[in-house]
Length: 196
Figure 1 (cartoon, rainbow, N blue to C red):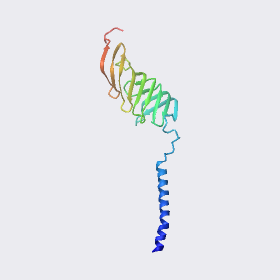
Figure 2: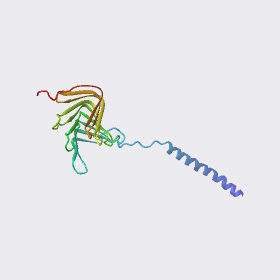
Figure 3: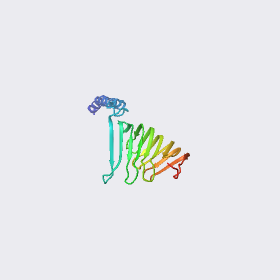
Figure 4: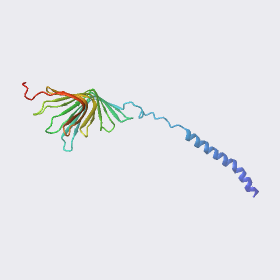
């Protein structure tokens, strides 16, 4: 029995030291800051750029639906967003006039579902047999390419031939070819019987 007591007495400091060492090791690991990521993945630095880009989108039948061009594109990996200088998007539908949207600056969100156009935004609907070309200008426009819709809360001016209309807030639906001005609308419409 005395032998066992002596063994336990001798073992106690070793167990205590082992426990203390383990606790110290755990405490050091628990309070250690992670190694900083030096890959640049979390900085807002571009990971690639493209000059003079052209992208085309086809439908399931292989028909051209839209093209996007730009002078300079920059992609940021931390947000997966893209900035484009002088973007121009053209939307094509069989039997309908081509619609072109352009601006000085474009910003594309991470999944490409939203494109924000700013600075000198212009929307042009080509002429058709029934109508002259329509040109709309605004300071900004938020475009949803998949839905073929766009809107802005800003002031918009639309000109078609000698007719014009302006107002605040615009909603465009290219699929249904509808355009809505939301408020403070004024305009002037040329008579169809006016001599040219």
